[in-house]
Length: 352
Image (tube, rainbow, N blue to C red; front, side, top):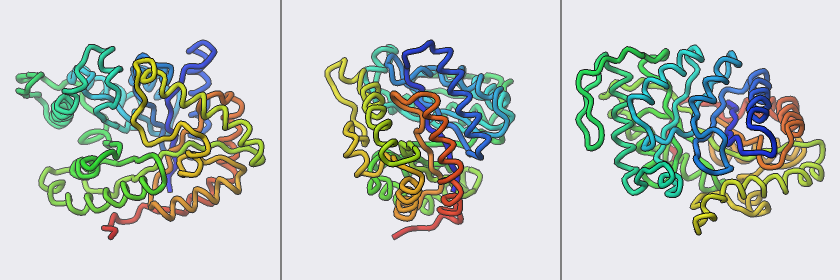
């Protein structure tokens, strides 16, 4: 089992510079604890995120960490000039000496696309084209592409990635096509939401990984065991009562930030995470308690779902920096050691 952090970097009642400083300190503590990776989100014009340009924030993080891997879950490909993104990703990979993990996605918020003067309806085709350009640019000395939106002819690829042929790819498992796409491209995968939903997505991904083996071989995609992740919101305190007292209002604050832009435009986010604290707990997407409780609940999930990467939202809502650091320390000392032997990657196999 590997451990990671998932982070929105929400807006707080403090200068953004202080939030960044504290969050980097938090990531450094996770690195010292032996965490594998740190994944930031990309969202725009909403209090949910203070990292609308993930590469800027991650460049700073790259220079203040040494071992932990980092990236975005996800870079919203339809919102980018693909050549500029390609060059920035190469820079990031070198700034971190080969620690960049590249998550890619289409986006789910029409209001963010509208604010960026981009078509949400065309987001799927735009994603496909930008993704194709990235792969071409990573793997060729010259970029040639003639597409619906972008055309490049004999463009020299002076910037090259540190990792060969390119940084490891990540994808969020949503809908029926997520698993086949991720498996076809040899991606690591992450799911979220209720435990049964996560279990179903992981089973589908494992099957797709076996089914897509020949396609990966034919395309020369490196063969390896993928990391299969589940995102969980986690808070640990000395007692269940203390954890509940702190986490309940923090969860509401976080979900209010998540839903703010949607509600401001008369909608509601179509996600598999509940706005209700108790429902989220019952569904398994929110894990709160003392170390014994958190350890037991996560061990049960790992056994049920079969994931080998636990990526946790541990800094969220109204939690203070001190509370986040204490929760991380309790997880490191009293939860992490017993979970580390669970969910070993092993060979990916078909699950009936």
